[in-house]
Image (cartoon, rainbow, N blue to C red):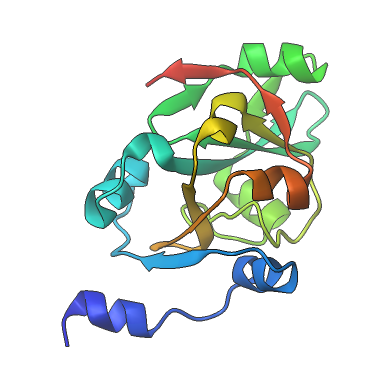
Length: 167
């Protein structure tokens, strides 16, 4: 059995997959070999996906340290200045990894917007909603799920924003 087959055979439930199943969201599971600091470029390469359709789940915070989630194309980064202006915050910055882990209940690199430990406002780059399907973290490092991006609006109340910058 190849390493890839073993990984596929060992996909276990995560809070994210439990959330998706509970809400009847159709999704497919895509395990891959996690590479430290490989990011969306690595997962896209291994799974044969366009990195633009692989969506990062970023835990950020406003000026009062209130957490929020930003869903962004894998090949783009967040303009925190544009995001802050659109959501009515003075400033927005990424959370430190240990703070992000505490808010989400997931390890950085395995953060899913679904099934987070704490409910947080979710913002989604508007152009993601035009894609037919996205790949997004399934709640564990080395594990993406593919689904309709509208599920993020329907089940997370994700609000569209325009804050993408080329990497």
